[in-house]
Length: 80
Figure 1 (cartoon, rainbow, N blue to C red):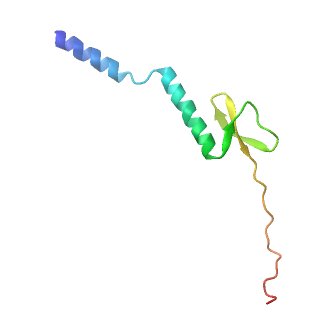
Figure 2 (figure 1 turned 180 degrees about the vertical axis):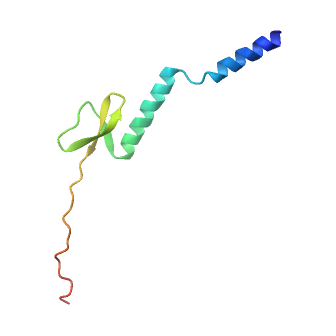
Figure 3 (figure 1 turned 120 degrees about the horizontal axis):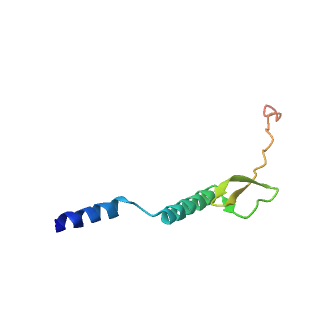
């Protein structure tokens, strides 16, 4: 009977998984890492030359907008 109680205590303790605060902390760390991978930064607000990629916890992940370069389709390469 004593072994059964110890076994059940162990099973219930291990099966619960991480607590909610630990899980939330891990998710926030993953979002900050993903923000850094797209060359962004978690700030309180984005500047005009940045856009919000997604949110790191409460703060937005601000990524610099890239300017589109004009296509060089009008260049004449047959002059040689």
